[in-house]
Length: 311
Image (cartoon, rainbow, N blue to C red):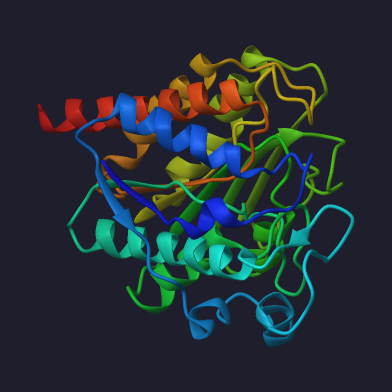
């Protein structure tokens, strides 16, 4: 497994008491290093403004990166810039781009972007919900523009709907967006009747739903859509805040539910995508659950890849 990260992602600091804290990434890095000692760790490059501009408006990019402001700088009630936040967001997107290049270039089959801030709430024109730039969207747009892919799938199991990713690709038939999430919940999007141009499939789950409902949503609705789409690349917004210990939502998943989904996704990606899966860290605000679930997800993907190759 190849893992992309960057020290700047630990320096993004929304302030004392903010749930999207640097410790989130620190515990993930420690857990993944311990669980997968043979992994190849790479410092990510920074994305360019041109790469960001494939999915974000110029005014939004300037708003996040423009120097000369005092910090901390609050973009909305939940989204705060510190002096290192712009650099962190650039390297988070750069990690996603480098990971796509690696799996499509044959250097790796799977990659994990251990980065923050998260990205899936950032729309084409607005940073929001702890998110500055939408790294998974930047990665998908890069795969389309540079590698010429005709079909890219984005899977999102964060407990909060990825409104930004849906917003960016709602009229792009080359990108399939699949999401399970608690609903109603922030950001208020993700109803089942939000379908884009037939490329958006949302599976909202009520508060209190657990693993049985989560697995049914994927088995009955989302994974069949993935099968029908037959993507050449699978990108994953890997948020682990649907875990029952998470303080920001009310789903009741356990680590085994993420492992189950990892096995399902890896099996379905084996033929059309040649097993190419890039996962990007999104939410997850219980530190213990975040570490455990990250390892469960990546372990399931790695085991499936080893089984496919006979390793």
